[in-house]
Length: 545
Image 1 (cartoon, one colour):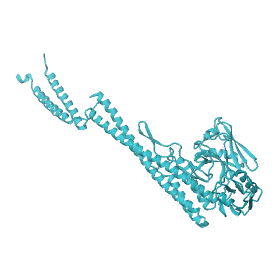
Image 2 (cartoon, rainbow, N blue to C red; image 1 turned 180 degrees about the horizontal axis):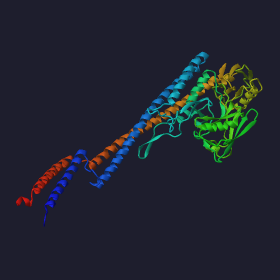
Image 3 (cartoon, rainbow, N blue to C red; image 1 turned 90 degrees about the vertical axis):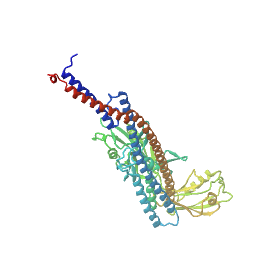
Image 4 (cartoon, rainbow, N blue to C red; image 1 turned 120 degrees about the vertical axis):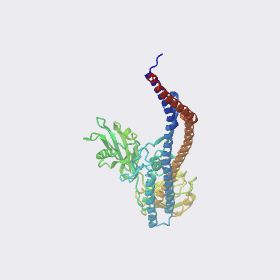
């Protein structure tokens, strides 16, 4: 076989290049610490490396989410602790205000501190995190959750209706905060009417801020008389679209309970020439109120919900809603035919003993009831009453035939007995004075005992403050459980990451002892190829001429 000079030189060059490539690869492995530099080196190992690294990166993101959720929950826990301290102090002040020896100036002094506590509570409910996000605003974290609403005469919630959640594992999510509406707003209240059942009672709810505000107003002898109202249950912050022929209408009725008369307004949406695409709840409210003028009813934006209210308070009025056409009731979360009645403020005079017998014929009794305006009546019990119901009916009959009619009533279902002072102002009170007999001692009343609207309001506030503390405790318990879950999941991720990194190291990392030995061998081979090339290069026929 003939071997030309050019070909022999090319063989030498190829040998040097091959050894140089092997040496360069080994150098890259030594510098990076990785044995699989390209998928071509080991396709199976390369694919496995990608899978392992993806799992590690995903777990690292879960760990970041855990850190973020923990930071927000720690802020929330601190806020809830502050809120509890505020309510504990408010309870102390409410109990202090119920002390009979306090005069008006004393109660005003307490009111000023209650006002400060109210401001502090609003600040807690509007707490932000380091990123400027409101922790109690849910998925609308850039919207201040609690703001003052003059139409509603109180603080309303305008945050989101969904909790923000973060993935902390492939099949596990955790809420990084609680909704302010659940913690501070929808708190069970024995003083409000509603459909909720709490401790066997049908009750409503009111916000913690409203409870503190009610106490503040009562301390100043200023009472917000509950108006007839209906509140929708749907999130309506972004209005509704009734354009393009998608019209709707409903009937809003105000009934005067004193004489049974009523007036109905049919509201049509959209209102011409409006195109009907209402971009916000405020636009919907404006369109409705434009048709309710002079009806003693109005629509207001209660945070994110639509509310209809009567213009005056008390039990004299009932407001009701019925759908005429379209989808308005469904859109805003109302039931067809739903109604709401206002409430009168009144002082409650309560006995402490349950009556099991109502016979006073052998021991006639008489007592005096006195209303706040000085109207009085002597109630005489000199009959053999068949039962307590007959006794109550007789007392109410004597009240109805006197100057106390419409000012004082006896609760027809209460035992121990209760007298209620009816009033739409701060002067509501009823006093009971013993004249003769044993009725007062039998029913658990004391001579000269007075039930005042302030006493009733303050006692309702105390009950609602307890409910508020229960709400805060429930939220703190939930936060604590989530923090524990984050800790447990974090430990699992740490173990998982360690296992994955160990497996990845076995798959990808370089064996330095073997690589250094190979490097020395390849370096020697390269030197040998270079020396051989130099020798071959000197072989030429011209050297023998």
